[in-house]
Image 1 (tube, rainbow, N blue to C red):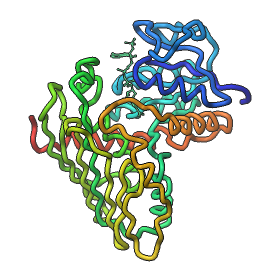
Image 2: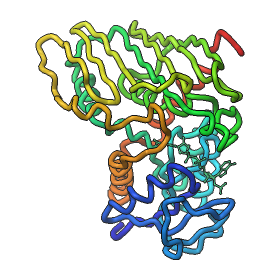
Image 3: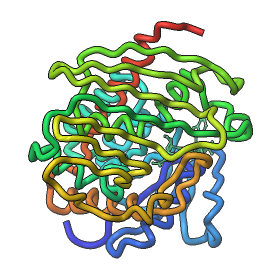
Length: 336
Ligand SMILES: NC(=O)c1ccc[n+]([C@@H]2O[C@H](COP(=O)([O-])OP(=O)(O)OC[C@H]3O[C@@H](n4cnc5c(N)ncnc54)[C@H](OP(=O)(O)O)[C@@H]3O)[C@@H](O)[C@H]2O)c1
């Protein structure tokens, strides 16, 4: 396939704005239309005459090749199944969806329609994360003993009250584990695989929402590794996401995707970018201001269409984090 890939963005809220900028920055990509039940353009659109808008995907008249799904978490499958039925490729915001029934149906529908399905876990491309992945694959970090992942964010009351679906089980899928920490749970799964057993303690401490706003999960892996994951949207003022990896050769500590401590026997720190440590932070606000990693996701998605190959983060790969989060919710020892 040659020429531009034309996108319809479904959902016109917060993250849709990031996609407008990201698509504009890519040579062979163009946004042609939006889908919004209320026919509301994303706030960043200054010239609405450039784009078609419709309440339903099936009402879009413009020609397009792919959709970008930016609706709430538990609605992703509805748009993905519809797009697949129309023969359109699907780039889906994280998480893929909030149940395995939904994620499986999305993967199956896109496969049988022979359209691509990619998931926007953009942190896999962020800063030092690809380097850590490569070193883990090559066994350079030694045997991984334990991993402490801490995603202590703060979201103020307006974050939940402005969009009452947030923090609900039926539409959002839960609280900070499925919404904020899922980016890092995806990284955890990409690096270390899916745990064999998970036990969790979840609580609602600060926000008037249905789901948790604080929790701890302990993950045991078949190779003996133990992981411990903290997720919250109630910790003021919000802290950089932190991952401590302890191995037979030493320790690596990462904050906001940057190596901040490197102590691995016999190997120098492969990157030295600590001055960028504050660049990618969602610790205290939900907005994505730096779209560079979304641009990488979109570019790879376009290449996967043109080269007829799998996207780097395909449906199966993007489903891993949902599996882990659902296990965390299912195995909560302290119902609230
Ligand atoms: N990758 C990242 O870093 C990142 C960052 C933020 C968010 N996200 C993801 O992006 C997705 C959207 O998040 P957001 O923050 O952009 O959400 P948002 O600001 O609340 O926008 C959601 C959009 O979905 C539409 N929508 C359709 N059905 C809806 C329903 N039943 N209830 C509420 N809205 C509905 C709304 O427009 P209409 O009501 O007009 O249809 C709205 O424009 C989520 O899956 C989230 O996890 C990813």
